[in-house]
Image 1: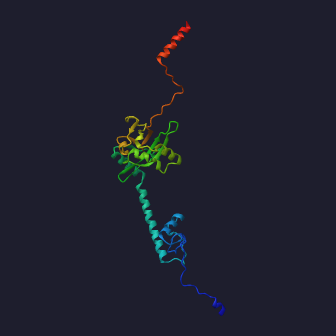
Image 2 (image 1 turned 120 degrees about the vertical axis):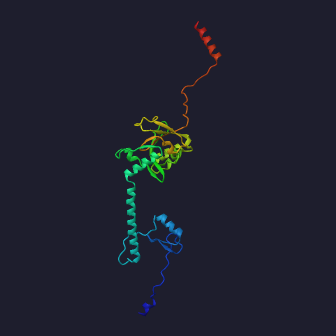
Image 3 (image 1 turned 60 degrees about the vertical axis):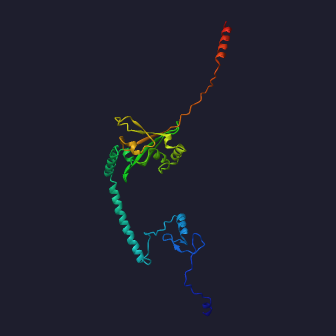
Length: 281
């Protein structure tokens, strides 16, 4: 018995320090509430969030056993339920505010206030479903269909872009299309190649009016790149959303003829004519 006690070492009262799991150099001071990773400083904490994609917030819906459940867990659950109830009320209010009938009325009213004769179609029309124009903060954000003419042997690029603010110029809106998130890789490359090193005044913009309303002054209206979208649409009849055609102002290259043109001196031609006349005699 005494021999056993001689080799027995009582447990230490101090908890051994844990090393930071990111730098593996310093002693840890913090523990992530979500993944429980030990870190020593703010840079290591931020780095662990970036590498592991951790939010750093405790999973409030995680299971807690009855043994581990305490007053802090109860307070956290109550706060979680209150937050869920508050978010539910906000979601219902948001759905009520975007009611289709109310949304259409506000859109037409604000368009008319800007001298735009906006006509909205019935809900089952494809163009009505495509239109995501809206009014917010005293500004209208339009859906625009762009028909961009590329090279002569290429098919025009047709894009439906949403959220064009009516206070921006038409040229500024066009130059910002290449960063739109809805574009695929091919469309983005085509736009970047077209816009490379060019300003807005290097393109001509034309507003295409709806063919069903030919009582308007023509079917196309030339637009200035420095004119705001609001000014472009003023005193126009727009069905759902505007359509803008874009062409480059680059000069058309002149093709070289397949044959060579030889210029002769007049005296040389006269001598040849006289010699041919003598030979015929």
